[in-house]
Length: 130
Image (cartoon, rainbow, N blue to C red; front, top):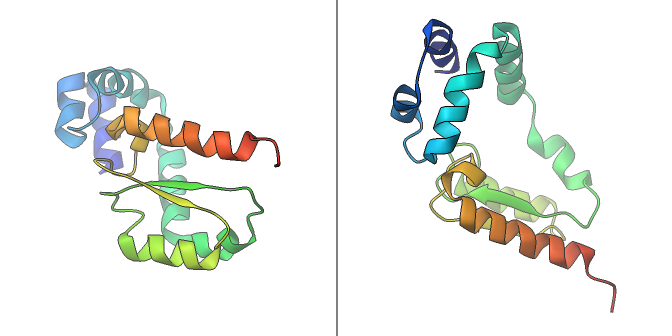
C-alpha cells in the first residue's frame, strides 16, 4: 500500500487521491502528505515496513521506565484490543489511553481527543510529587 502511494506521489498526487487511502485525516494532513510523500526514499519505506513487521514491541516495552503512557487508536489495525491488554499487562505502571475514532495516526484521525489526552498524560508526568 505504501509503495503504491509513493508511486502515486511521484507521478503527482493530490489531496483527493490521498483521501482515498486516508479518508479520516483532516484535509490539511492529506494535502501535506500529497506534497511531501514523493520526497521519501523507497528503500526507507521498505526498511521501515520490514522493521515494523519483524521487530517485537514487547521485547522492549516491559523495560520502558516510568513515567510512561501509551496512547493508541481505538480503531488501530496496529494496536489491537488484544495488543493493548498485553501492553497493559507487560508494563503495569504505564497507563494506556484508548483514543476513540482514531486508527494508527491518532493525531491526524482524532486530533482534538488525542491532543487533550496527551496534555492530560503530560500533566500527570510533569506534576510535582505530592
